[in-house]
Amino acid sequence: MLHTIIFQDNIYQLARSIDTLYEGLLLDLSEDIFLDKAIDDLLFFDVALQKTTKLVRDNNRIADYIEILHSLHSCEDRFIRLLDHILQGKGSMSVAFAQFLTKIQGIRNAHALLRTDIGAGIRKGDAGADARDVVSRSELSELLNF
Image (cartoon, rainbow, N blue to C red; front, side):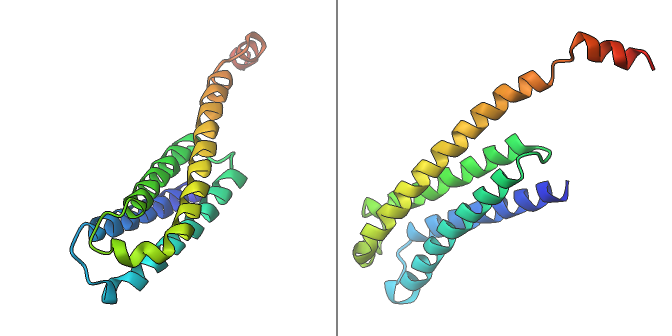
């Protein structure tokens, strides 16, 4: 159960941090002050989401696994939205981001694939959950013979 709390807390913090950067890029920020921080944040989000996804997949027997995958999928959506915002040249620092667009596009492509894989895991888990919730006749008989 401890892992569930840690995963959810980590994913929550990542989602809030991604939202903060996205909202900051909507403002008229000075690139001299904020560009390096924005780039560092993007690289951090890239690595943190990849690590979190690997850790979640390695612990696929934890309670609320599917719920955690849903949260992770939502976090990936937010990150891709942020990356798309930058790639589309929106915001006051769009010119400053120009030199990083190739790297940002690569990160975006990798996370689009990761989001697709997480979605597949959700669908597979949902189908498996239905099968696990069914009690066979022999199980029911065993349970009633206490």
